[in-house]
Amino acid sequence: SSTMMSTAASAASSPNDNVTQWQMSLQRRQRRRQRQRSKRKNKDSWRMALSRQMGDAIRSYNWYPHMNSGDPNTCVFLCASRDQPVHLIDAYTAQIRATYRPYNNLDEMESPTVATFTPDGSRIIAGGFRSDRMIHVFHTAIPGRSDIGETSDVWRLGKTRRSKDGQKGLVSSIALPPSSSGSSSSTSVFAVGTYSPGSIYIYDDRMSSG
Image 1 (tube, helix red, strand yellow):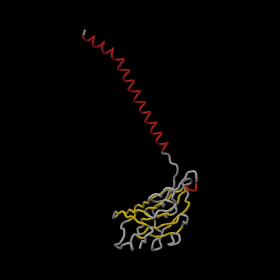
Image 2 (image 1 turned 180 degrees about the vertical axis):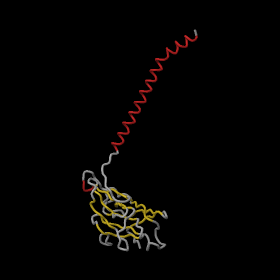
Image 3 (image 1 turned 90 degrees about the vertical axis):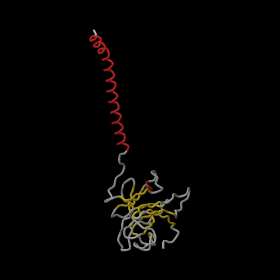
Image 4 (image 1 turned 180 degrees about the horizontal axis):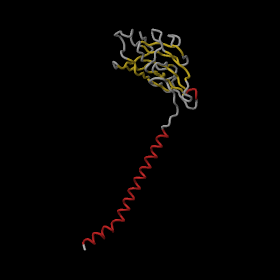
């Protein structure tokens, strides 16, 4: 009698168990489809819009501060890479619009570690040269070789590479405060960060670099 009751109870619960298992299986399939759709959506949202090979490692890049997608002339960015001069790249075509070539005291073209626009976009500041402690400042409208006093200026972080004065280490970052609202003038104050040894110095380009 007890065996018959157990069998009857088991038979009575089986339909419910089957429904529950089917529901769980359906939920798993739905979650799997949602994950697959999410992955496809993420791939679409991160699809590459522009690509350009720049040789060796990219060290730094910086967008033109007044970039406006409605004005193609402003859609450019700076790129500094190993063994290359500083390039101004067209953000629509990936073509090089202009090149800025810093030269050291041995008259050798040397690649900077970092390059950035001033907030008004009128100048390009490049630093991080292994041969000397200096920062090259280019006029954006005058690309080409750095001719000191004509197409570019040099701010020295020390009298010589090995002298004990000034900021030590290889320049790894340069930061400038944003321009004041409605102001078109270039900022004079900027920060320079270095490594080996690490340091942060604040400079004013209105003061002599010595």
